[in-house]
Structures are given as structure tokens and as C-alpha cells.
Length: 170
Image 1 (spheres, rainbow, N blue to C red):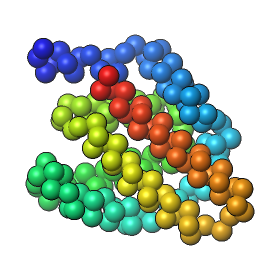
Image 2 (cartoon, helix red, strand yellow; image 1 turned 180 degrees about the vertical axis):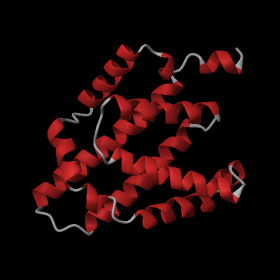
Image 3 (spheres, rainbow, N blue to C red; image 1 turned 180 degrees about the horizontal axis):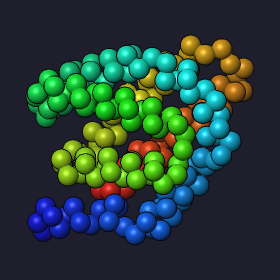
Image 4 (spheres, one colour; image 1 turned 30 degrees about the vertical axis):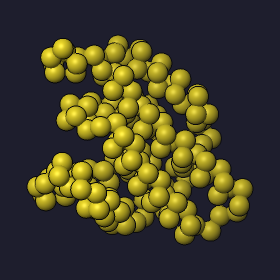
């Protein structure tokens, strides 16, 4: 099978109705609902308040793993990637599962697939996001119940984003 044939069989080649159905099934399976998304949006400003910290986490992560360092050797490309990951993070915290976000996430997955970035690396990148979100949650003064609901909603949103992106690999 040629590279062009393998790329032609990814989730972004699915009819839009099927993409919508898969994204909705994923949200349903994760029990990610409108109340969760509203809760995330209500705390978005605080959650996105330390973008330098997130970029530093990604930078440390990439530089601490030889496989990643060897994959993207050009410092300007690495800096752009880290900036892009920050943009993806803030987009995710808009907590919108609509068509624009769905397309964006699938396009990101398509790019990773085309660049032959292993699925495991994509998944590992999301651990950096979760660790950053945990650090942001620790700074927030919230009642225990609201903190638990927000943490749960954030984890499910991160899983939705990750799993939708990895759908491209199927």
C-alpha cells in the first residue's frame, strides 16, 4: 500500500455525517455533556492563565526524551511545535465539540499520521496537558465538589480530544 493510499483511509476521509456521529458517540461514551463544557468554560481564564508554564512543560518534555529530540532537531521547528501545542490547548479549553473543533482535531491527527508520529507519542503529549491542568487546578479556590466535577470534566475533554485525534490512525 502506498503512502497516499494509507492517508486516504483516515478519519478525515469519512463523510462528515460519520465524523459527527463518531465524535458524538465518543462524547457520549465519555459522558461529556453540556454541563461539563459550561463548567470548563466558566473556569477557562484561570485554566489558560499560565501558558508560559505549559510551553515550558512541553519544552522540558521534548528535551528530556532523546526520541523526541531526534525527531525534531531544528530549534525553530521545535519552538513552533510548542507554540502550536499551546494554541491547541487553548482551543480545547473553549470546550466546544462543534464542527470547527472536530475538524481541527481531526486535521491535527491527520498531520501526525502523515508525519508518522507514533500514536503513543500523541497520547504521551496529552499527559503533559493533564499535568499542567492539575497544576492549574491546585491554584484554584473551589469548593471540593466543584473541583472534583471540574477535574473530571477536564479529563474527559482531554480524552475526547486525544481519542478523536487518534481516530485518524484507524
